Length: 369
Length: 69
Image 1 (cartoon, chains in turn brown, red):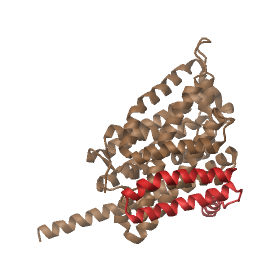
Image 2 (image 1 turned 45 degrees about the vertical axis):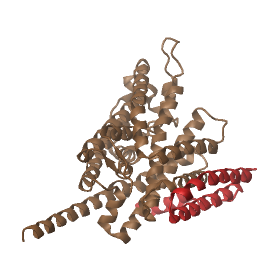
Image 3 (image 1 turned 180 degrees about the horizontal axis):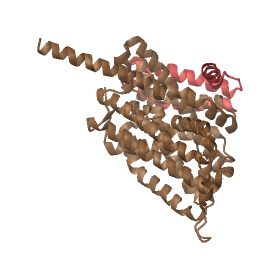
Image 4 (image 1 turned 90 degrees about the vertical axis):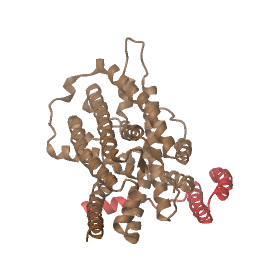
């Protein structure tokens, strides 16, 4: 069995890019209207708790990925069932991510190209990088994380002249219930998806640094998301923000420094697509690992291409238009993903703690009767 | 036209991947790969012929709505 070991810095960069990709293209917490930034802050706290739980699970079994931990905790039969559910979830989410990126490319830049061509081209790159393995993915992210964050920071600095602080007031005007809904949605869409890293990042070079990697990654990714959301709200105001699908793209297109520096949105598009590419690759990787695990195969590489082709097929079946897609995303997605992001990890943690305690006790009894 | 393109694409993918697959992997992996690729091929063919396939998004919607209300 070939284990792929990556360093802490690479792990953190993968998580940051993952959090920035697709979720920063469009704003996720629009139910809370002007207070979506507050919803992101609240969701960030929840996400940190989930990251802590997952890091605890990984510290208990530092050698294994989540699938092996599930098999150890639930036994062969029930474990296979849960792995099957998880693989289905990852596959389906991967398709949603693929559709999201291609719709963004299609609407923002390549509007004459059929979407299927963009999907096939993007998937081809993903298959390539996933076949090269997690280490290559780690090095790629380590290299690209600085330019991507740098461009986002430049974008934010350049939009300062267009900002209007009154777009944020009054605070908490919509009430508490939409806030909670929006928090749930932000948690479900980018911030709570840390669970995938317990599958994809199967081993870190320093065994005890899971807490550091998961929590730093989620924190930095969440802060970038928060800043992008604030920028969009400050520049566009809530009326325009809730009227378009890709707010960041619109905000970037408004930048105009002295009539000289304009049309930044092309750069922003490339940056967001790069981050989305990492996200899609990680989903493809995790799904392939799940499929290989279900059939008891040690290596996942052989199944990457068929899984990618099936993803493209499903993306054609699922939704006809972006309206349908967004509606489904807002109404159903947070409830669909909740068991996989929160409930299963908590159950796994409880069983894992109990198992570890029992093995420790039995070792103690054997050594000193 | 679409069907021809799909067959052509899968033929290319299959011929590129199969050679290295059979050289480097045990038999079980190869069988699994062929089954998965065949499934993808059949779905692609049906889609390119314009057949309406069942949409999993609807089932998930029904399931979630029944559970959450």
